[in-house]
Length: 317
Image (cartoon, rainbow, N blue to C red; front, side, top):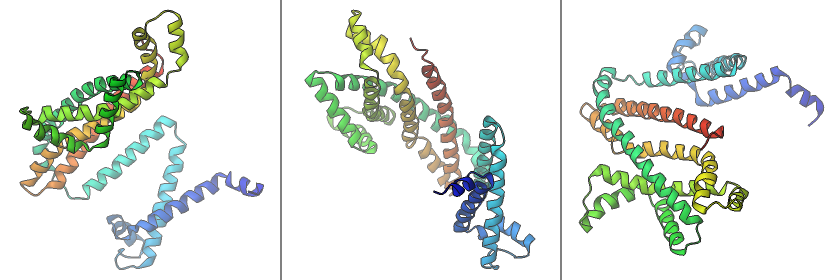
């Protein structure tokens, strides 16, 4: 690329102009001329509404929106980093609230049924997920250690378990446990069946996370501990695992958040569908369930960030 083109690209105005044209192309392709915003803005320009004004309003509205968004982004970038993040979050939250408000939702209907979704659906989802993730961690550690061992039966059992539960759908596993075990005389309620299925399924996925974390610790650490006369079990507990946790914690937190959504299908989402069925207000309940999911996930994301920061500082025992 010639030097004068490079110098031109380094100019702030050229990047802003490119941003404007990219936003303009995106907005123009989405065609906002039939939206409520167009019905407010276009009459001020003399074009009339988007439905009867033709091609001109689409171009004008795309240009106006692109200019507003480009200026907004440029102004945000002049703020301190933390303020930038807060402003972006606030703006995006406002966009989503406006998007949901445009659906003409029945907020009194949501308010009446919100306690049921929280106290029954969300509470069940959380405690099922927490019990399941605890059992899944135990299974994952056992599976990872068996995968890393030189014991043939242990390696075979672990690889078969991981392969089967990673290779079959969770819904099928729930069905087999809930409806299949009674054929053997073992009858379980829905919640225990869900906990077992989630534990087995996510334990298989997390076993590979644990194995990768353990193998991510340099072998020299274990060799040095062996040279000091430490036994294998003590080396794993005191030397390898504390360092492996830095690699294990982040993906394990992601697995827990995914488990929250899988465990809630039969609880929170089921309640959302049934509560909205009586008055044909399914959308109100589904959006409410989505917001509850998001709040729960966001809270656990904050907890995960704290845990990651703790292990990232190397403050492990």
